[in-house]
Image 1: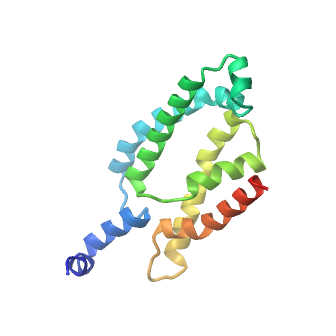
Image 2: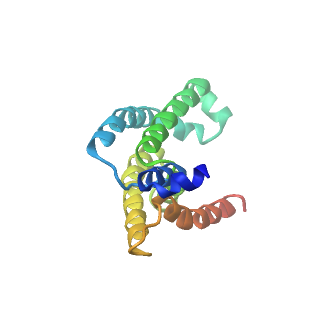
Image 3: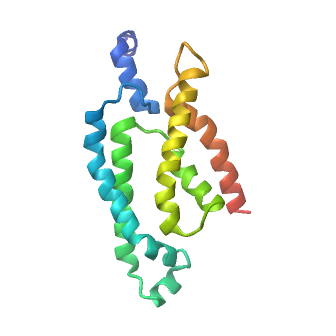
Amino acid sequence: MTAAILILDEQTLLAMRTWLAGDLAGLNWSTLQTALVPALIGLGVALLIAPRLNVLALGDKVALGLGVNLVQTRLLGLLAIALLCGAAVAVAGPIGFVGLVVPHVVRRLVTEDIRLALPLAAPVGALALVLADIAARTLVAPQELATGAMTALVGAPLFIFIAARFFK
């Protein structure tokens, strides 16, 4: 009964769709400005530790031998991830696969260097998200799919392909 009442109210249905599948509909500049601060801090932290992440990719023993503080680097990495993911989810809800697939695609197609791949993944991810939003709004017009549903439809097979090649 409660679910039926919630679904009958259009505003509640829109809010449910946003928080269950993720969507860009109904965003305003105020929301984006609020999320910009933690996103920029997270990006700054990520760029700061990017050289250490390159060394860490060689393995713990090599990184330790080259003087990388593993605990500090991992904690700063977790901080950057939390800030970036928190800002993104606060704005658009849990849109999946963009943050999983895009960095891997950038690293495979452009560069393995995290110092370059990280700042490049941001605009590529934004472009992928905008294209997914456009597709979600136009493929079944006049209805709309949630943006998160579209990214899942495209991202899940890509992620499986990437994972299968990695574990080969």
